Amino acid sequence: MTEAEPRLTSLAHGGGCGCKLAPAALQAILRDVPAGAAFANLMVGNETSDDAAVWRLNNQQALVATTDFFMPMVDDPFDFGRIAATNALSDVYAMGATPIFALALVGMPVNLLSAETIGRVLQGGAAVCAAAGIPIAGGHSIDSVEPIYGLVALGLVHPERVLTNRGAQAGDLLILTKPLGVGVLSAAFKAARLDEAGYAALIGSTTKLNTLGAKLADLAGIHAVTDVTGFGLLGHALEVARGSGLTVELTSAPPLLAGVEGLVTEGVRTGASGRNWASYGSGVDLPTNLPDWRRDLLTDPQTSGGLLISVAADRAEAVLDLAREDGFADAAVVGRVAEGPPRVRVVA
Image (tube, rainbow, N blue to C red):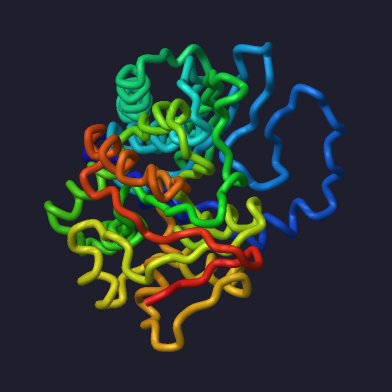
């Protein structure tokens, strides 16, 4: 980036998964969109807001397809590309699949950003895909008012090993593989309140590939998986509850990234956190004495967040061991699944 160029975040009205449409707005937009015709090979569509579509190719292979893109949450173009690519690939891993290739989605204000800066965004995305063992095989680019980058990501999984957000069973424990707080850290960054350690925590979390998901597909006792992104832990847990027809109980104090609690108690948070609560709060029961800042952490939008895994209680320790071996040192049990209406109940 040249000295004359603006900061990437100054060109975007939102950043990362925090710029996703609020759940209520998305529901209103889709309400009158006709449902697609039934296709015998479409194993997973948009019925339960799952992470990706799944199409059966044959008795041994199913194709997982997803797309994700957003505006920058950091100013370093290489880091922006890395974060966006990691986030896009997460949806493939969340379905238990292994990525096979990706296509780049690029929208850039070419009158404001140099070819070098735009190239660094793409190099960041390519570096993550190389780490995942896949090529970026093409894509599409446009001249855009705001910088946008992401991927179309494709993967393969055995049809009998597809992981979805709708198979949770009563008695399951819920494991979260990454700490929360990405939205808070990104808000602090934009407000010039994030120190070097906080930035390192932000980048470390958002560029950690959820490769664990592909390994979960082969384990017994894994009943449901989703990744925690723009709707926050509460929102994605509610999708699991509704998809599975059960109650999800969550702790009010899940693991947090370093420095997050101090920032949020000082009032640092994203607008998306409040929009999330306004969209789905009617489906959540909170303790009467829960501080607002704890609720805001539970609705905090997670760009490239961790996996939320619903696993049989007697298999939870094996999953935690596997997660920690895969580099998810903070993986922890954050709740359980119980009989009851499809809601989320937060417990102290």
